[in-house]
Length: 240
Ligand SMILES: NC(=O)c1ccc[n+]([C@@H]2O[C@H](COP(=O)([O-])OP(=O)(O)OC[C@H]3O[C@@H](n4cnc5c(N)ncnc54)[C@H](OP(=O)(O)O)[C@@H]3O)[C@@H](O)[C@H]2O)c1
Image (cartoon, rainbow, N blue to C red; front, side, top):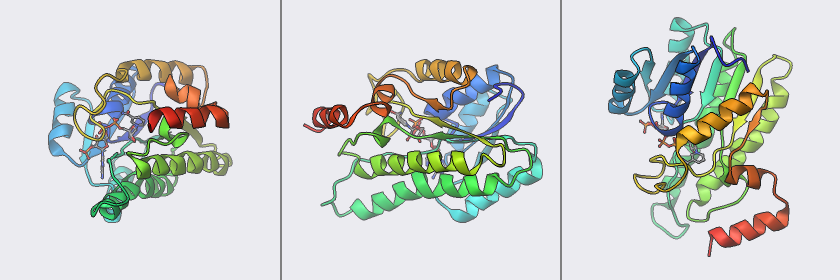
């Protein structure tokens, strides 16, 4: 991917990893559009970075995904990069009353939204890059977040097929595989003590500059390349 002079939509770009990517893409001379549900987070990002373009939407709603696509097609038809970053993570247990509700919400956000958005956005005439944010938990499960891990395994698998399907259209598909990082994912404080987003962003930009399309860092580097025994041993450590 050429890292400058793009017009990029980053879903969930007002906070965490999405914001880290947005800031870095701005520094590298790109036009950046971000979207998310919370107007307050979008306004805060815009106050920090006035050139950022914002759009409020809930990607779990099919009509809002279509609304986002139509707004882009009408106002930013030169958009050439889609970053499927928005995601949620919730602790849940199969025996809890709210298990199915939470599971549904997570599947809608982490699976249905990005695959539908991708299907819409590949119709844009200039689209040449899709970046999907999966997770090290696509490769080994943390059983406190069982559906999250499954959504990321799905999204990893889908990304591998997508790369193959989009070859003919000359659309590059990049998979970003973060390890646990210090963001508010899952709720404030749960990821304290994890590496900073800026370390991850520095690393993935170096990897993209080197032409890589599968971007790992720390724990996700180890898990994405681990043999079954190493994965089982990580599973045992993570789920005592
Ligand atoms: N942090 C980690 O440890 C880690 C590790 C591996 C992978 N990841 C992945 O990295 C991505 C970003 O997560 P993060 O860690 O940066 O957490 P985050 O700060 O909570 O970011 C998630 C973003 O997604 C947006 N979002 C969530 N649901 C949405 C919806 N229905 N419609 C539109 N936007 C929505 C949120 O904005 P609103 O709430 O305002 O909608 C938020 O800006 C996720 O896909 C996550 O799974 C994170």
